[in-house]
Image 1 (cartoon, rainbow, N blue to C red):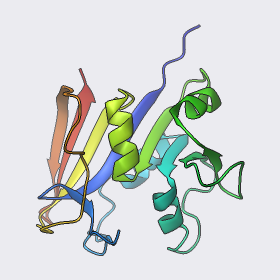
Image 2 (tube, one colour; image 1 turned 180 degrees about the vertical axis):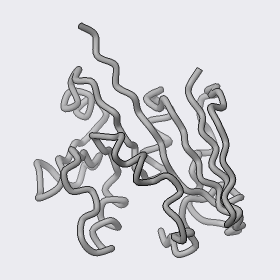
Image 3 (cartoon, rainbow, N blue to C red; image 1 turned 120 degrees about the vertical axis):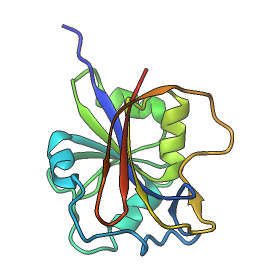
Length: 170
């Protein structure tokens, strides 16, 4: 039996394409509504993130992803800690994931998402565009990347001015 995993990017960005300020701060994100997060979160069983994102998550209080199998791509740590398994590269990540069917959320940051887009791992993109121009920061997409085509699955606009774009890989 062949298993098919799906890899999802579910992320907020500014109108000018940034996921965070230069210092990593995301104080500009709207938190007034759920924006579909709870339903999405229930639909995934595995998370992938970079070390900087993981370190930032640890500063916000209680670990928010308890019970989800989580991998952190990093060369500066090894093994496991209370919440995650560290993997040094994409080959190691692929080996850890194996051929089990999964719904995987590529949490971030932009560097990891860019790398996974480049490697062709991203099946779905859900972009939550905040009506804010940051004028600089950490861009979601790297300047130089391979062209990929995605099909629009849907859009949703919220009273706050936030717009969700949902795409699937061709």
